[in-house]
Image (cartoon, rainbow, N blue to C red):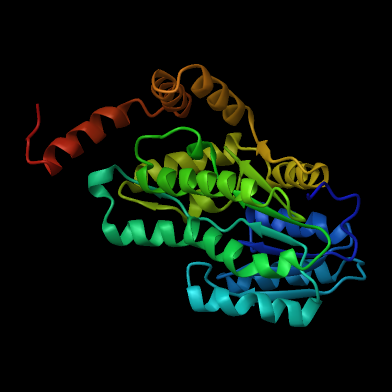
Length: 296
């Protein structure tokens, strides 16, 4: 049965979505702790920026970058062998890559569903599926899967994103039970408002709304370095689940008390805090037009 880590020195960590945000912060902190790093992202320039920055700091470990789309099965299938050839054993896997999309269900195309689920869900499945044989060969290994606050509550305008993050939650909870008697541990993480590039890179059907959300995140979200510190601490202690930010704790508590009504209550609170009360009427009108019902 896997327990926590007393030291990361000499371990090899694979981090997807490593070019920015939580992924970059994880890379920086693990590098200072003596980890070997295999950094994975589709952002070539971003990965090179991280690599250049880390190479200027003292560390006896090795570092490689891998331009890989986690949604691409063939690329992900080939990735573990390439990393093992460069670093030897693989002990840590951080399935961190993710994308966002903001739109009501009728305005979310099936192509968008494919893209969001491809990165957010299949990226995690690919990571777990292809890396587990390598992780299981070591005396002690650990997987970190990143879900979201929206893997706890279902938020309007986030159907594709919430579906992907709820699925990561279900996958992780089931997989953790299957890994119970092995040397591989698993931590499921529920971040909330973390100042990452996911908001700036998110797509949707309302540019004004996306700009509003991005501005709010810039002003109010916690730094990714804080989230990374909490994640690393959770891995060291072998915690199965980690909530990040007060919103995640509040949503989790309310949903436990009121599984149905609690979802609406939490969504209402978030909408009020974000100053997006007008979006309810707008989304309602969109729904009626899409369903051919006309406006009231």
